[in-house]
Image (cartoon, rainbow, N blue to C red):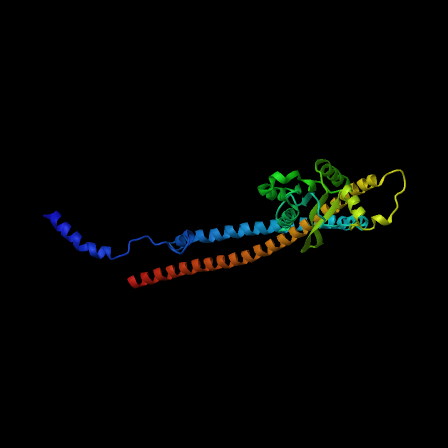
Length: 325
């Protein structure tokens, strides 16, 4: 009898229960905010405080990296400006013809070993790929020589078979001409070329750098262009004296030109890297400061709301006690 009455009462209550929505609704508040509304208010302020502490630490790191980059830039900038006098006479003597059409081209891409320096590495990679498309053909061969870890990581994805030589940690020690000339000799020994195209970032200012391509021709191509009246600067206006032939002199000039151009390109790229890192770290420090201001405002509002809620609870409790008397 009792069970029958319970069943009837249960069926009578079912429509009213079913009319209420029982599906779980996701709250727009985070778990910390929900806990704060439920009474655990100290958790949300602690989370904001920890976040503020981490942003302050990041800001200290970015400011320190900016100062380190500035000191390195001052050390390299003067040497880069002085090195421009090495390759400019060769350009006047042998010319610089980046649009020359040859069968064997080698693209030397200069990049950095470390990141956090803006888009200087992606820029030289884009220019190198563009040179590959311009000089590739059915009877032409284009190869890459990569200097720097960042360009190596990008180029290995789709051009691994075209890379003949890769060099990293070149900037680990202070750059000098002897170090770069050894690198230039290694490149000349490992590749066969008609034209070497060096891709690097030329330094203009802390916030400005220009992707640049310098071309060094092989002695055979130089002699061939000289015979057909190509653009070779002032080479034909000089007379050759001594026991060396014109081919031997051109061979020595081409090797020395390549080492001088490489030395200037490495220094220019190092200056561009430090300038870009200074700019990137300065932007990061400003962004961290803005984020810290917003977090401070959020922390103060949360703390003030917590204090206000506690005061309301105290006053409400005191009023309830007075009413009970």
